[in-house]
Image (cartoon, rainbow, N blue to C red; front, side, top):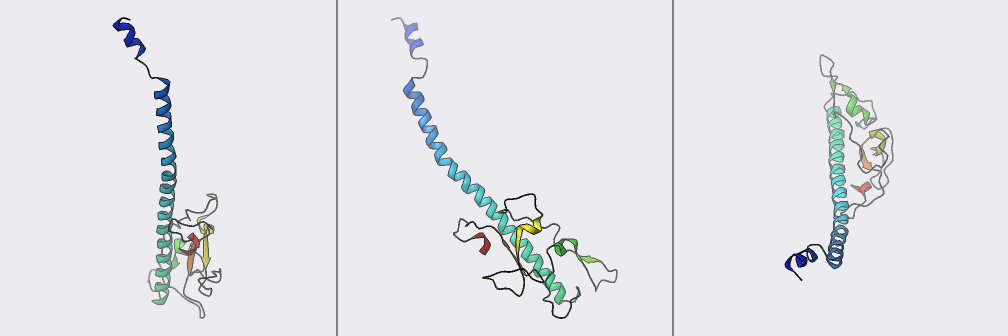
Amino acid sequence: MSITSRKSLSAGFSLIELMVTLVILGVLVTIAQPLAKMTVQRSKEQELRTALRQIRTALDSYKQAVDEGRISKNIGDSGYPKSLELLVVGVDDIKDPRHGKIYFLRQLPRDPMFADNSVSPQTTWGKRSYASSREEPREGDDVFDVYSLSKEVGINGIKYREW
């Protein structure tokens, strides 16, 4: 055989080399897929933490404004807002001589664990009234706290409802 004919025989990949390459790629994809799912879940959990913190801070700020006498309160009311929308649309500041409004949120964040994107952000959250217990949250005359309606469990082993 001449030198040119040997080069042409060894110029391509053998079937075994191609099979080994495909097996290696398959193993890499199998390893990468759970890592990608974990990254997506971790990102959604961070969004949930941020949204819960924003809403709870706004609820506490509303209560503080009531306690300071900036928002009118009826006898027997807890001092928490009647709905989550009040945090966004604002309430009249009765101490302001120009009768301005107090806003607590620019917009209400959605629960990132809620699957249906077509519903309003307010309906994505479970709402707990001041009169209900933490173990059995129920809606009532006010919004004391919010929680995720998801039945899934987080990476930390705690249900999203309990965050």
